[in-house]
Amino acid sequence: MLFNTQYPLVQAPMAGVQTSALCIAVSNAGGLGSLPCAMLTTSQLRTELQAIAEGTTQKGNAKPYNVNFFAHTPPEIDPTRNQKWKNALAPYYAELGLNIDEFPSGQGRTPFNDESAELLEEFKPPYVSFHFGLPKPELLKRVKAMGAQIISSATTVEEALWLQANGCDFIIAQGLEAGGHRGHFLNHDLNLQMGTFALLPQIVKAVNVPVIAAGGISNAKGVAAAMALGASAVQVGTAYLLATECSTSAIHRKALQSEAARHTALTNLFSGRPARGIVNRVMRELGALSEFPPEFPLATPGIAPLRAKAESMGSGDFSPLWAGQNASDCVPASARDITDMLTPGFQH
Image 1 (cartoon, one colour):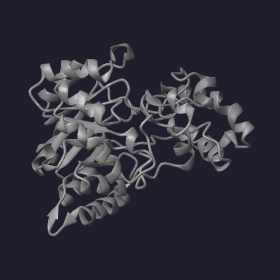
Image 2: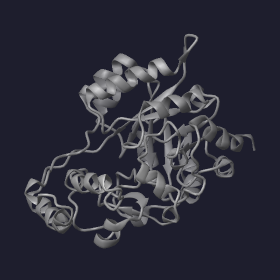
Image 3: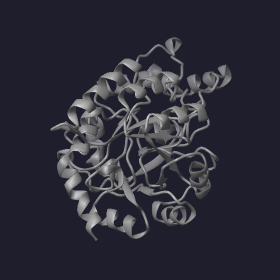
Image 4: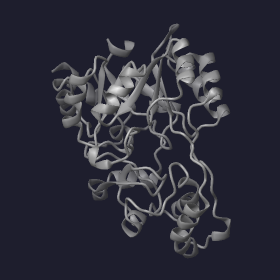
C-alpha cells in the first residue's frame, strides 16, 4: 500500500488549527497523519515529534506520518509597503482600542532551514512534505539522505513537472477548491489555477510519480471520483477541521457549521499570499485579494492583534477561517470516525 498505510489517505497539514494529536489519530486510524511545522519553534517541533513517535508506536511498530514545512524565500521588509498595510488597518486598530504605534512587523513564518533538517535527522520521519515548491537542493539532499520520501504541491502541470525533475517522490495536485494557502510557486497568476478534477488527470498524464488529489474532497464519493481520475492517493483537510483531536477554535468551528461556510474566497489579507477561507468582515471591507498587504508572510504580524482582540470578544471578523469550497461534510467527530467515513471511497 502507498505510504505503508492501510489507506492511501493523507490528512492535510493545517498550520494554526492542529497539533500532533490529529496527526497521531489519523495515522493510527490507517491514514497518513501530517504535522504542520511552519509555525513551530525548534523546541515546539521537538516536543511534537516526540509525541508522534510515542503516539504512533504500537507493539514496537511505528505508524508512518508526514511532517510539513514551507519552502518560501523570506522577503525583505519594505517600509513603504508596511506603512501602506499599517494605514489600511489603522481604523480597525482605533475601533478595537489598539495602539497603532505598536503595529508589529516581522516574518511570521519560517521556511525549512538547517536547524529543521538537523532536528529531522534525529527523528527520521518517513515522509516530509513542502508547500511553495521545494527547499534549496542542499537541504533537500539532507532530507533524502535520512531516508525520507518527498511530497510537494503542484497547482499547474508546469509545477508538477518541475517537482518531478527536482526530486519529488509524490506530487499533490492541489485544486482551486482547497482550503488554506495555495501552493503555487512558479507563477503567481491566479488565472492559471484550476479545479481539482480538471487539474488531476492532466498531472497524472504528465508525470511518472504517484499523484495525490487535493481540494474539495470531503466524502467517500469524492474520494472515489479522485481515484477514478487516476489519483494514487487523496489528501483531505477541511473534513478534519471539526475533529475532536483538531485544535480549531470555537469561533472557527461555529463558522464551519454555519451557512457562512458556503462562501469561501481566496484572500491575501492574513499572510500576504492567496489562501482560501470563509468570507468575513475584513475580507468584505478591504477586498479579499487586496493591494494593501505586504509580501508573504509579512502581513501576518500586523493583523494578528486585531484577530486576538476580536476573538476575545467572540468575533471572527479578523480571523483566517480557512476552509475549502466544500465544508458540507464537516461534522464534529473523532478523527477515526471521519477517516472511516472517507475510506469506503477506496473500495470502488
